[in-house]
Image 1: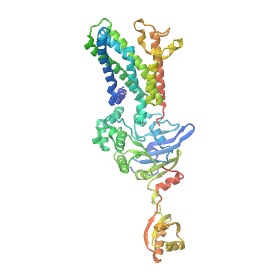
Image 2: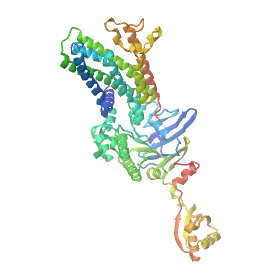
Image 3: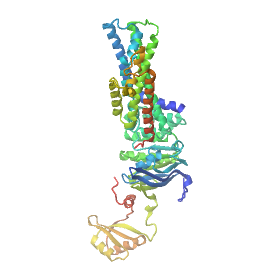
Image 4: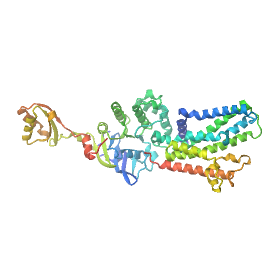
Length: 321
Length: 249
């Protein structure tokens, strides 16, 4: 599962190439290209109306593409849809089932549509999502969390290579969101399935995905590997932002003001905090300077730029929610 | 072929697992029994035997029109219901072509209409046998078959219209409304020559039984069959083209 960073397109499970959707002259999705590799969890991130759902629906063949194509394990969604869709499991928006049927009857419906799904496979996915005791209940008696899990079971039934999920944590409570995340991680690990998940919830994506594809107004903004940029300050020459919480704020300000290596970015008198910009390697010097001026230090924290900050920067500060 | 059968089984289960599924059958049974009793009580010599009663019940002028309404009502949601519930998203990403999925729904609707007519015959004959006996003249079976057959064709015509409306509008109400309204309006005949090319006067083939007079000059049994076939092909053509091309948003 360990891939070098410069992965070739050949081992991509899912490939998007110049995918566009035009509705009434407006480009909802515009020349979108990205890959999802074997066993990888990729996030499709963007503000509302960025074209995430349209993209996901085009991958599943629910919406026709105006231009470009999607390849799943080398088969084109446009020209060999049956062959391509066989490798795709999807939950698009909320998982909807026939409410008057039991969970088991609902899964049986999908079993009849793909003849290679055995009864053992149904039991296997039911166990995987932990719904053994709910299979004989009608779906209308399910909670949203249970419906989500049945949705995952449905998506895994035909042993796909890639799972596509559209806003899977929408409407779930914090416990449900966490449960969902754990399931997805388990599935990616145990079944070796690649996952493409769309969301506007940044923190979720940070915890779940190894890469994020950021789109806005239907266009690709950036593709980032999570966890790589978080380590700013590793390089000693890099400028970092550091928060100092001190005892005597005014005196500390004077000390920092006289110090040529630090620049005061912000003062927060209520919390006795100073936010500085300085080089990583100069942090000890400043601590010494404060110490020799008899200023008590309560806390020193490096302020890392979160994905959220970056996201706002990429998308020009548009509202996310 | 096996996969298509499985799709039809799926559609049938989606209909039959609903709690309301038995209602049309119950209505037919109650009406067949009550009407037989009423006829026996107040019009003793009007109905001679179970055969007469079954022919009367299953003809379009008897209870066949009502059966067509039941068929329209209970199949109106076949396509629009999937859109409304959102289940269409799972249905169409399972590697079965959209044409096949829609065809399986239409076949399930046909089976449903067929079971209604058969059921009506069974309960009518059973209640008729108890109350009027089973004496029969030659050709009694044929009369039942012709009456039921024309009722089935009549039901299929309006059900197909409702089916198309369901696909085009994605609305169960519109499908039901248009299907029902068409059945209501079908009784009105405009005595002009162009009107014979309209579906309504042709849908009821029972007008030709026993050399009956067609409502408009120039209409014959083969003519009506061709008109019905053309309209059904048009309705289905519009349904399939729309359903295959539609973006599921």
